[in-house]
Image (cartoon, rainbow, N blue to C red; front, top):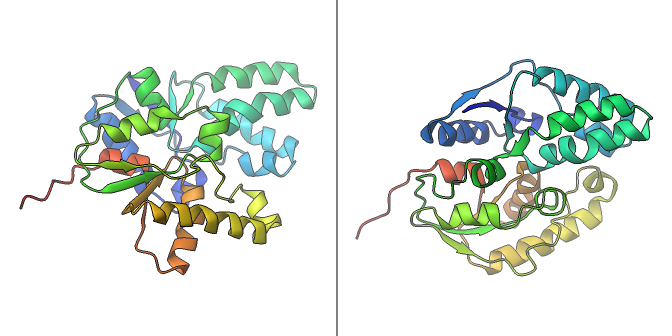
Length: 247
């Protein structure tokens, strides 16, 4: 299968290892990955801030850039959530039903990475090995917008050597929330500290999620708390071939 990689701004600028991991896993499974170089921001920032017209300009560009591909995959639940949840509704709110239909069509071809593995490829074991204790944080976009609950966990459970540890009240927001963290920074930090406290209580060596934006927020608070917790995207764990230590 030919898969078009939607890398996202955050990953392109700050976390290039995440999309590299996506490519490694998909190629390991025998699929061809292509990277449309004209892709830019999906418009999530603009739409979240209320700039619908500006956001829809980027939505139209997204549709054009990925028009020739049957499958679009991204390691970002929030950006995929934008394509699937905000594009068409924003177009309709501005009275453009024709554009809304075009955006609904591209949304049907756009998948979050773990969702694509489990729901489209029907794969749970990608041949990964990661002998560490891991906690998984279900981000708001992955859980509430895309409805991804068991898919990423099932993939992690099939990683050789990995021990998945549950987080108490795991579905509570970490406090990042894009514009929320800027406009309500004190509340955002307080929520993040609560989340970090519950994560650290698991004793996990690694925290993973489907959104590097949320991981950045939690990771920053963890660093300030001088915690040894390591932050990784789920894709990086799935790409790992780390060997078990033999005693």
